[in-house]
Length: 156
Ligand code: MG
Image 1 (cartoon, rainbow, N blue to C red):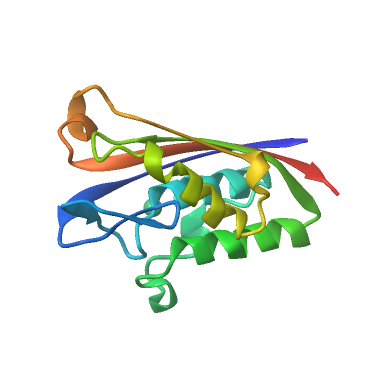
Image 2: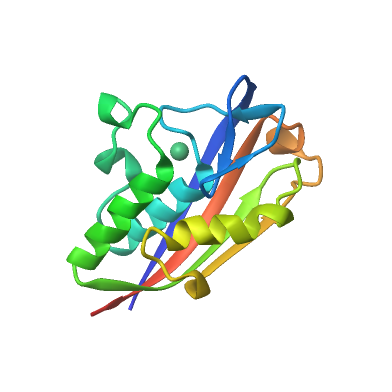
C-alpha cells in the first residue's frame, strides 16, 4: 500500500471564479492561478503523485505550459487518476480538508464528490471536510484558501 500527502494554497482576488472540487461556488472573490486554481483538486493531485513517487503537479502540468492556462483542474485530476491506473494502482481512499473563512462549503460537498468521482475515484472513497481558520493569519483574513489531501493506493 502507498500513502501520499498533498497541500495547496491560492490567493483570493476579486474578478475570479471560486472553483473548489470542480464546483463554481457563488462568492465575491475567487482563486487566482494559471489554471482555475482549484486548490482541492491540486492537493488531491499532489497526494496521488506523491504516493507514486512522481513529484508534484508542477512537474506534470507546468504553469509555463499554455496548454494548462485556465485549465479545468478536474481535467488535470482525471489525467492524474488515469495515469495512476496505468501505473498499476487503484485508489483506496482520499481524505481532504479545505480551509477558508467563507463562504460556507457544506452545501457544496456532495457536488464536489460527484465531480471528483467522475474522474475515476469512486464517490464512496472520497472524504471532503471544510473548516475555517478561526480568523487567524492570512486565511483567517480571507486572503486565500488552502487544502490538504491524503490518499492511499493499492497495487492492482
Ligand atoms: Mg495550485
